[in-house]
Image 1: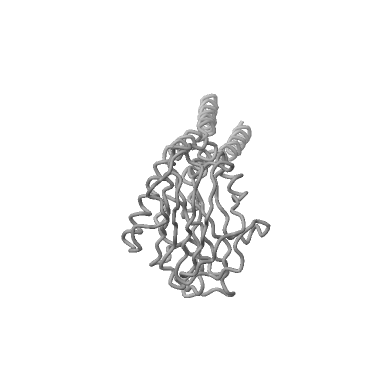
Image 2: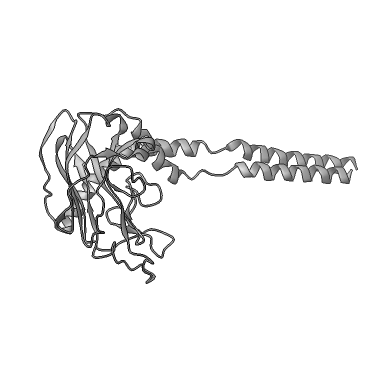
Amino acid sequence: MRKSIRKMVAVAAAGLMVLSSFAVVPNTASAASTKAAKKIGKQKFDEAGTYHAYVNFQCTESWVYRNPWYSDDGTGLKSKIWNQLNGALGSEEAYAIEGTTVTDAELKGNGTYTIKIEGINGQAASPQAPDGSTPANEPTFSILSISTDIPKDAKDKVQFSDVHVTVDDVDKGAPSEITWREDDLNDPGILNAVLVDSYHEETPQLTGMMVPNDSVVITFTVSGFNYDNPDATGETESDASSDTNSDTSSATSDSSSATSSASSNASAEDSSSFPIWPVAAGVAVVVVIVVVVVVTRKKK
C-alpha cells in the first residue's frame, strides 16, 4: 500500500511541475505598448484629427539613439528618458544622454512642422560611455526618420514634402523620394518617413551624412488633412531648453492620452488572460493526495 501511495505522490508531483510551467504571469508592461500601437495601426485615418511626429534616430558604434514612440523596451513614449537621446554603449540598459533635448511636433492639420534634437555635444560622433568605454570603430548614421502615430490607412492620403534635414546648421536637403518604412507599415501599422536607413539600402534616402556633433533639425510639410493649421510655419517657439522640454512634454502627453486607452485595454486583456486553471488543478491534485493518505491510514 505504501508503494502505491508513493507512486501516486510521485505522479501528482510530476503533474504539479507540468501545471506550474503554465502558471506564469504575463509581462503586461511589455505587451501593453505593443498592443496599443497595433490597435492604433488598425484604425482609420481621421482627416480632422490630431497626430504627432517624432524624431527616430540611431548611430551605430556609438549606439546613441532615439527609438520609435511605440518601443516597449523602456525607451518608448512613456519612459523617463523619452525627451533625451539614449545611449547603450558599455551598458546592459539604456541610459539618457545628459544635456540633449528632443522636440517633437503635434500635427494639427496641413502645414509645415519642425522636429529636432539638440545638445548632442559630440556624444553621437565621439561618445564616452558611463563606464569610460569608447566605440571600437568610427560611428556612422544608421537611422533618421519621422516616426508618427498616423495609422497606415493614411499611406496614400497623407504626404510629407519639402523635407529638409539640417545637421549642425548645414542644410543636407532631402531624399529624392519620401517613402514610408515597410517594417513600420507591417508592424505596428503606422507611418514612418525614411530619411536615412542603413538597414534597407534599397529605400530612397539621404546618403553620406556625417554623424551630427550637436544637432539634427528636420523641417517638413504635411498634407492630407481636411483642414489647415495657420500656425504650422515650421518655426518653433523657442530654442531654450525649458521651452523645448515644455513643447515636447505637451506633444508626448497628448500622444500618451491617445494611446493610454489602448494600453489600458491591452493591460486588462493581459492580466485577465492569467491562466487560473493550472493553479486550481494543482490545488485539486494536492487535495486528492491528502485524502488518499488519510483514508489509507484509517484502513490500517
